Length: 220
Image (cartoon, rainbow, N blue to C red; front, side, top):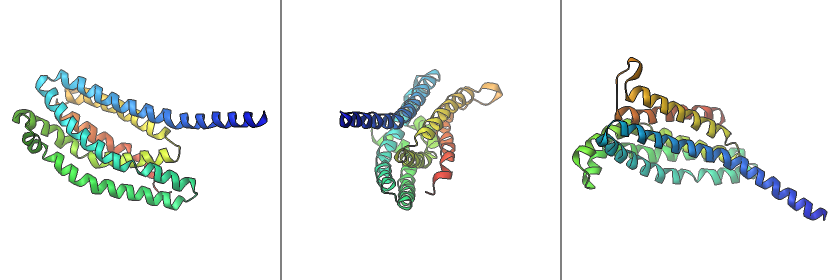
């Protein structure tokens, strides 16, 4: 009987630890999805041409980000294995390698996004839509490398079972993105209306502050 109780207690403990890791990461993912939803709604307020072009640009950016963050995600299991084995120096080495890979992947993708209209026209998209999409892509291209850096630190903190910082940072970034979208896209409080360019610029500007909470944990 005592053996069964021990097994049950261990199972409950494992489930609890899993939820403590999963819930903050799920909340962060929902916050990021909310950002995309709000962006789409606000682009719609700017007109049908804007939402078509902005959606086209966002699709290209998201496609590139999904592929590269899939590679960067390898940091999480590797860092978790090293941390569990009691090798903190190896954890730090893995994180630094992840950052180097982010830079290696990010530079050519940034160049590709900068010339996104050429790619879109070659893929058969309307020239006017591709041209407007390029204004969005050029504004957001500068945030691609910081986005990969954020993915590295997100994987790092997940491996150390400390996802709360990820959740707080993403939620705050989402709220800031929504506020800045409204104020600068539509020219509120006497500021110029920047339209679609602002929405792309918002994303890249907010990505960089997201890295700040992790600077103190970079050296393990």
